[in-house]
Every structure is written in C-alpha cells, then in structure tokens.
Length: 288
Ligand SMILES: Cc1ncc(C[n+]2csc(CCOP(=O)(O)OP(=O)(O)O)c2C)c(N)n1
Ligand code: SF4
Ligand SMILES: [Mg+2]
Image (cartoon, rainbow, N blue to C red; front, side):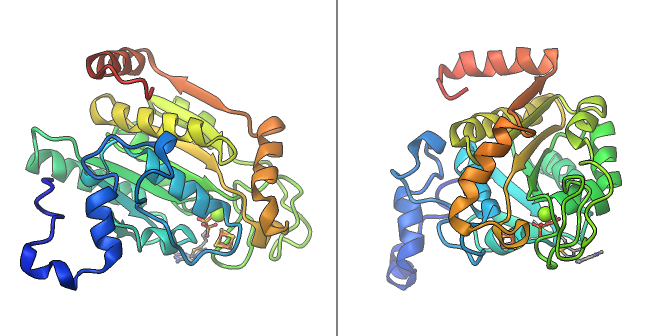
C-alpha cells in the first residue's frame, strides 16, 4: 500500500474528521513505531466500547502498536468481545463466522501472495480463547499442519466474555463462572503445546502485564510468518466482568498470573531463528 491511499486530496481535507487527519500526520503507518514509542504517536485503536478495565482492549492496543507494517496488515476476527474494538480500528479488518478465522485467513493469505507476489501482506488472526480452543480448534490446527503463513493471536480471557460467562476450554480447572456454576471440570487446553507440535515455527505465551514483551513477540511472530511458516501468540487478557475482579485490578491479576501459571515462554524453530537473525541484521534494528 502506498501512503497516497491514506493521504486526503486537498479538496476533501476539510471534510475529514480530525481523528483521520491525526492518523495520517502522526499515525504508525509508513513509520517505524512500536510499543516502546507509545505516547508519541496517534494509535490505531485509542477508543473502544469494552468494559472498564478490559484486559482484551489493552491487549489489542498493545498488539496493534507492535505491528511491523500496519498499512500492509489484515486482521481477521470472529465473534467475541474483540470484535467490538477491532471493527473500529484504522486497519483492514474482516470478521468471520465463529471459529472459521484460520480457514478464512489461509485463503486470504494465499490470494494476497498471488496478487502481490513481491510484497509482504501480513494476515493476522486475532480472536478469543473460545474462538480458537473450542469452536475453531480444528480449523486452527489444520492451518498449522498445512504451514499457512499466518499469525494467530489468542486473546485468552479464560471465558466466553461476549456471551455472558460460559466456560471456555481455556478457563482454569475449578473456575466458577456465571454459566459454569459448579466449576470448570478439566484443565486449560494446552494450545501452546499443540502449536509447537502442529507446525508453528514461532510460539509465544505472554500477558498484558509485559507490554514490551508483547511488542517483541508480535514483531517476531509476524516477520517469521512472512517467510517461514505459521506463528502463534497466546496473550493473557483477563476479563474483570466475568472473572469478577475490580476493573482497576486487571494488571495486578495479569502480573500474578505471570508469576504463577502464565509465565513468559517462547519457542522458535531453527529455520525461524536463522531467518530472524538475517532480517534483523539486514535492518540493523534493535527492536528484536
Ligand atoms: C457458530 C456460533 N456459535 C456460537 C456463537 C455465539 N457466540 C458469540 S461470541 C461467543 C463466545 C466468545 O468467546 P471467546 O472466543 O472466548 O471470546 P471473548 O468474548 O471472551 O473475547 C459465542 C459462544 C456464534 N456467534 N456463532
Ligand atoms: S466482558 Fe470481559 S472481555 Fe468482554 S468487553 Fe467486558 S471486560 Fe472485556
Ligand atoms: Mg474469551
């Protein structure tokens, strides 16, 4: 994409909202911006309709700030709370039938590779834990088996937030939820481990309590998906409304989880590590 596409023609400039003009003038498009630069540029997602203290909203904001080339990124979503914020971002975004996200993303990526053979178009799935670990698990795993060059990001709030609190495969064992009154009966599904054994070349587990790490893993995941194969990032984004903690405790909850059962983990295949080293050496950037 060229910046001519987003730059308003003189005659229409007055008609565009200030938000748009700010994005053109100070946004992350065609600029080397990342999580470390937050506060110095106009962000892709600044306002959202999520509940106060929503971990997903913060997670999405950090992921979007970490995209290496947002102007050439397409986000694929599915029903769930993430849809609300993502549908109003200044990015190409498409929603799918629940659970179909990795099938749709696979087709889109293949089509873009044919249409733009000399360009990287980053296709990024960003959906909830229910969308990946439950209803979309088969499509997700098969996209990994097929080695589709897409990045999958799970916003793991350990519940079906959008539909009022059913248990998800990613809910913790024993967790009592609005619609799991006697507690979840089995442990979190090991999607992180499945990703490693199903073909992903880069896999990371991180929480919203570590913004810099999010920036780093998103960048790595997207660069590696361009040339080597599928990548997966599992991001803990706790939901105050359904996990029933005060909205100002979200970061504390994430930090405690990080110290306990949600530690930072990263897996990188040998070919992905070699590729990443080459890309970063060529760019001479310190954002790895
Ligand atoms: C085929 C289908 N089944 C069920 C639903 C209803 N539905 C919408 S969102 C959702 C749960 C989403 O949970 P999750 O993926 O964890 O996302 P969250 O809302 O927690 O972010 C469900 C069951 C649907 N839209 N389509
Ligand atoms: S229900 Fe939970 S995940 Fe959904 S918007 Fe509210 S806080 Fe966020
Ligand atoms: Mg969820």
